[in-house]
Image 1: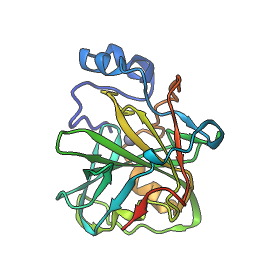
Image 2: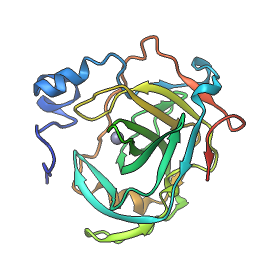
Image 3: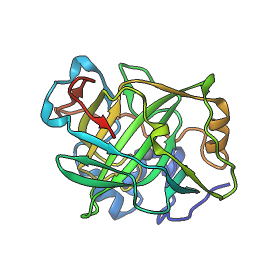
Length: 234
Ligand SMILES: [Zn+2]
């Protein structure tokens, strides 16, 4: 079943409306793809630089109420209130959406992981900051407790962050149309693990593969922030 709520144009991950043709679907998508630094990209420590300027991401996540939704070809947890936030260079961005890509969109040291979580934030000007967190799926992975069926439930969004705070930071775009930029991206370089039941929760009614192919890195700077000099969890 395809769900087209909130989709102005019917884009998908395969066929005529797939990623190679998103730019041709409407003027808005075409304009967005003209931003030259598109996402996702491959990330590796060897190809990144250490720059403390890019390492000032701070998390202020709190337990809060979420509802589940399926739109834009993926499963979402949408916070009811603006409560959890991050700050980057003193600018505050509230958590506005958590959604999922299978397999991962970013690749880490050439590894494509089975699941990538996007924690989407927005500041007062409507600008986005996205945190990407990569997951493995295993029997011993953490259980996420959620009763499927449109219910509202409380959880701490920190569940989707790894224990270590080391990460990559770069400037890119949204990975779903309109793929506009610039967007500050923060992608953790450690994998977490969730139980198989989580995959069942997020994969019914959405495409089996919903990852945008890798985009050209061009000559953009990728900053690597190690544990010692990077973000902090409050
Ligand atoms: Zn995403």
